[in-house]
Image (cartoon, rainbow, N blue to C red; front, side):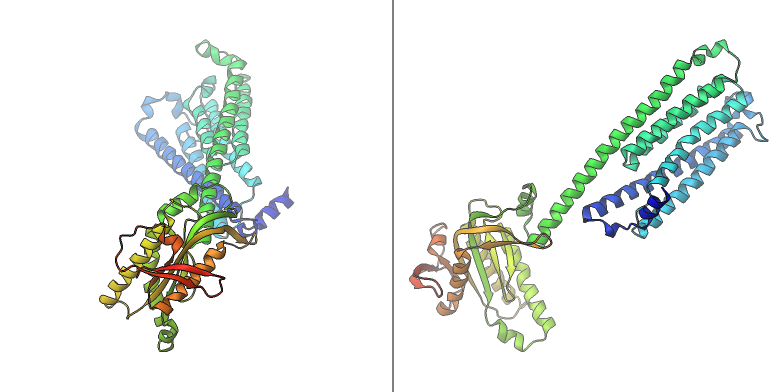
Length: 446
């Protein structure tokens, strides 16, 4: 046991196989620490109560309660016991805090010792009561209910075995204590029912049952914690996969999906955006100015994409690739992409007009079609990506903006899916696409 305890003491949270296990163990220790502080507060309140009773309300209790036992009356003894218990719980809570601070797991065996010490306090008090009253009355006082308080608090240990152990120790101690008292007192007809062993055995078994039920409650708490941590992991996975710039609507649907985002063929609309003359702009400015410039641009551009249910899938230095329709779609992917493009152009003109950024031109290419979407990578690092000819063609269409002096070009596939009520639309006809066999019908929207 000593060897096992030593291994537990050396084990750090970081040694665990996953973030989930580390966070789960931390949650258990934090709950245990909270439980210790709660017991500390309860004991302090009880000590205060007995002090008040001793000096102000002793007349409401039997006169024999003021008789001395080893130089002190029962109220003083109870104040000493709970005062010692409060100090013990404070030390225990501080010890747990130290282990948490060092990111070490508190040994498991001492937790059983702690449970046994706590649940023995009511037994000790019943013994003191017996020594004062020399009667079976000690088994009939409100002190017995303290067993239930400690058993209930054991649920915060988040361990079924510890809760059951607490109930068993309470039950066994009560049964043994009742037999000890019954063998040493004379029969009193006023308490005749308390002289039947079955009454006390039933109480002891009830304490065990309460420990069992409390253990079940602990299991439910653990399940909820695991479920909450699993949800947090899923959220973190989505953040890692899609970055910090996912719209709340899209993020909500992603979180509703269960399991891994497997590869699948989907109809998507791809948008490529490129900042014109970025290389020339960068040559005359220091890196900090360049980064600030890009952040200013991407800030509102990302908002425009998010607002139209798209996702920035990749940043390409002086541009980005956005996808509409994956991993979720509302059936209006082409319209969403075109609306996002118009919003970007409108915001860009506003930023230039207000002087927040220098005169800047962009080129946007949009194309739609079938693509394979899903996770690519290893178990340690994965990335959500879109693969297919639709991606390459959208990139090529964006590059045509330089040839036509335009800002937004779309393919016929996109054109057929959007409303035709925009002004300044130009049909460019069939256009040869570099790196692609054949021609494509291209439309200029801006």
